[in-house]
Amino acid sequence: MGDNICAVVLGGYVNGYSIIQELYQFKVKNIALLHYGGQIASYSNKLTDKLVIGNDKERLLQALLELKKKYDKLVLFPTDDLLLENLHAIKEQLKEFCFLPFNTDNLLTVIDKKVQYEFCEKLGVPFPKTISIKEVKDLERLSTIALPILIKPNKREDLREKVFRSLRIESKSSLQKNKNKLEKFVKKGMTFIASEIIPGDTNGSIYAYTGYRSPNSKNIENEWTGRKLTQFPDDYGVFSSASNEAPKIIREQGRKLLNGMDLYGICEPEFKYDYRDGLYKLMEINLRSMMWHRVGNLSGVHLQYTQWCDAVNAPIKREKQVSETVHFCYLKHEVINLLFRKGYYRYFRSNLKHSKTSLGLWDKKDMFPFVIDQFGTVKEIGKLMVKKIIGRQDA
Image (tube, rainbow, N blue to C red):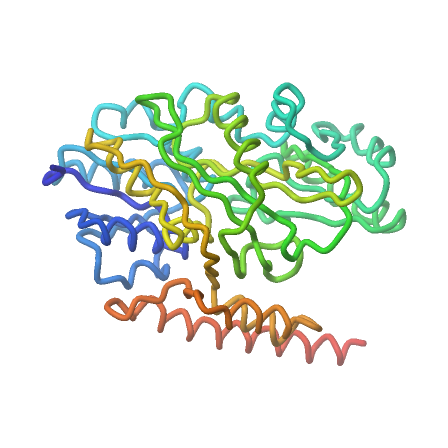
C-alpha cells in the first residue's frame, strides 16, 4: 500500500528530521523533503526527493506540483506556522492530490491565541489572564495586568517579519520603553496577546498533550503527554530537553480542546502549572509537529505514522504510551545553555545522564544531520562568545 504515494515533510529542522525518522522506521517507501535550503534534515540518506522552497506560497505550490508529476498522492507534514498558512492559501489547488492535516474550515481562526483562550473559557480549561492588542489604543490596557507580563504575536510572525517571538515586561519603565516598538508593529497590522506570567521556574513546569485527530473519523486516533524539562536560550524559548512525564489532567484538558475546537491533524496544547491555585493553564496550541515530538515515538506512540495510515486508508493501531520515563535532548541547545546560562549544569547533568536518554538528530545509520549540526553548534558558540566580549568592552 502506498507505492505511488509520497510522504512530504515540509521544513528540515529537528522536527522535520524526527518525522522522517519515524516514517522510515515504519518502512514508508517514498519520503520527500521540502526545505528552506541547507536545513539539517536535507543531509539525510532516508529521502527519495528533496526540493528547496521559500517563504512564499508560490514556490511551495510549484514544488508540490513538481512532486505530483511523480506521485499520485502526497501526504503533507508541515513543521511551522507559515507553512500551515501557505498550505491553507493554496488548498483549492491541492485538495485533489494532497492529504491536508488540518481543518481547512477553521485553521486561520484557531491559530490565533486569542481565539484559543476564548475556547478555553467556553470549554472550562484554565488559562492566564490576557488582553488582546489589535489597535494602538489597546496598548494602554497593558497597565491593567499585574507585572510581569508576557507579550506574544497572536500568530507566528517571526518567519516573515523581524519581530520577537515573546517579550517579557518586568517593570513600568520596561513597559514604557517597549510601547513605541509595539506601536510600530501594530501599525504594520500585527496583533498581539499580553498575558500574566504564571510565577515559578518554567524548567519542568511546562506540560503538553499531543494527539492526532482524524479529519476522516473525527476521532483522536492516538495521543501522548509529556513535559519540557528545559528550554533554550532562556525560560521563554524553545525546547532543549523533554520527557514523557505528565499528570492525567493534561490528557483530559488536551482532549477537551482538540474535540471542542474541532481540530484535525497533529495538535499540541501546552500548559504551565500555576502553584498559586494548582491549575494547569493553557499557554498555546500548536497545530503541527514540534521540535520535541520525538518523545511520543520514544514512549511508544507514533503520531506521524498514524497520520500516514489515516491518509492512505490503512488500519490504525491504537497505541498506549509507556510509563517508563524517557528523555529526549537536543545536544546543541544543551551545550549552549551549559556554557552561557548560569547554574545550568544541574539541568544538563540531569537531562543527559538519565538511563533512557535519546539525542535529537542522532541515528548511527544516518550520521550526516547530527554531524553537520555539531559544526553549527561550534559556529553558534563562536558568535555568542564574540557578542559577550563586545558587550564587556561596551560596558
